[in-house]
Image (cartoon, rainbow, N blue to C red):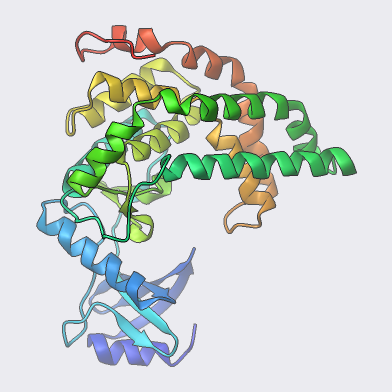
Length: 342
């Protein structure tokens, strides 16, 4: 951090900054006005987008998200040299734990509230859903990248325990990934895409557990609006369920309770629940971690990725059992009669 930034912030925001502590890709500021989070952007449009989005969501009643601090002139984006900075009030909460069902249900409930507020945002005329949804394009690219990784391992031989494990699992992973992508045209996604365009829906698109903060009072906040954009909200639910099911050891009851927590706030119909369950066939946890590591993406480390892939390998029989339990899901639930679409 540029040392001259701090006095500039103190002058602009009329505060005194006692301490600065780096945390992930942000800085924690201790000030005489409380604890703040400082974040820098290369693009001014991005900085304006997140601050305006936060305000719009709060005006729509979704208060459990980040709140930006204005400077003395009322601006929420502070330009300094070649960066654009925003300041958020720190939320005093712990990150959600997908291994704890209570946390999962609170996350699902909060996501549902966000989805209700994240509607009515006009779709730009330059934006359109073309062909298959962007998520499926992303999944196809991720699978192709994984195949290239396995070819390199086969050519050079496994260099560590992770690569040995990848070799053992590659057949199952590629089979599951290809199966979902090949069957995707059977999923009722076209109607979801048109609904998203008509309603102007926004999706968060990064519903990792660390983006949900739970306070001592039992409130849950959804943070990090950087990834929010026009998209199918159903994909947020798929992502949340995929991440939590691994930590919940693919227990059917956990899926049902998480869906019900979401459903109480923002009702899903049976076809949408069925679509979510079908899309969970894509082995996203393994593919995301492995391609993230080999792509040198921030936050992916050999030890952590190895542990996750080991867990998926150990739980593969339970995962398979969960994926075959479509009809049982609706027997457990109180959503009414189920009409099987497949």
